[in-house]
Length: 439
Figure (tube, helix red, strand yellow):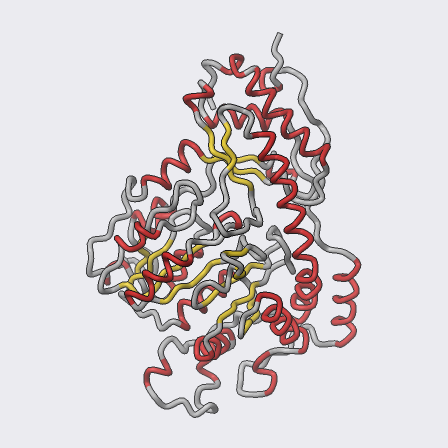
């Protein structure tokens, strides 16, 4: 008789896992306060005291900068907008090259394309999954102007190594910190490690206001350019008396503005960040200790002198020890468990890999972004390589060894975590039932 649920046995858990819902009475009161004010947004896209937004937006910026120890914080309507604005503020031009990660949300690379630059993919670290400094340096050419690093899964990038490379070659470092608010590298907050950092307030991040983002920088000129790009720069340049041509570079502005409603919610959420991070770290410590005893599972390690805030919890799978594929093992574990409340349609929150390496997406395979003539790829002065095999570490992790899960998110209890552990152990102990099956 079958024991594993995938073969008809009894599941470890039928009950849905609790939803990760960070919204409480504080947010409700904040929204009501803003609704009562009659000002749901307070930006004007012209030179005026409201060019910088309303009271809630400016208060969020002050509180965010103080929390993370940054000189400037600029609120925007998404982290994607923040990345686009960051590339623009750095003066990136058509035909320039920007080194990016292949293992991240797509916007971390398309931010370069928006300004006509060429994304150049470097490989990632096998143990930490952030950009590998050695691979980064090997991709630098005379056309390279910036590096977009990603604090993937909640762990900061190797700031010492990559920042040193950037300084040596005169490059900007833009830090995509969407998944790592509150993480630290040598005592400094992730997001403040490069020239510009970008945080996400999207609904499934650590804290959120539905959609939103915050950019930070210690550079006054970059901060000024970021604020211009956020709010129709071209409409205010004349009023500010900007005359020099270099000041006009990338000053076609956008509407990347955050509303007062979003800012009011984000202000409440910021106060909760430390608690949410601590709970994730506690849950991962428990899960990692227990899952590490399963011979084919190795919980990912944390970079020395860093803290991890676990947007997801990475695990490494050894198919040679298990005797079955990663995909089949994960499929069997998912069959033992239940989905999460509010995300029932997404299935059990355990996946193989993360995202397919970005350079394998059609936009890079066909080298077409804007129009039908290959722009901006047709501006490349170096041979573009977006073929499979470009980043072998990334490909091995994605297609063979990496697993990620979200069971550690609050308000998970010890009982919830124990069900996850029991499911993994059950599949490990009865994996002989899976021999010959397809993933």
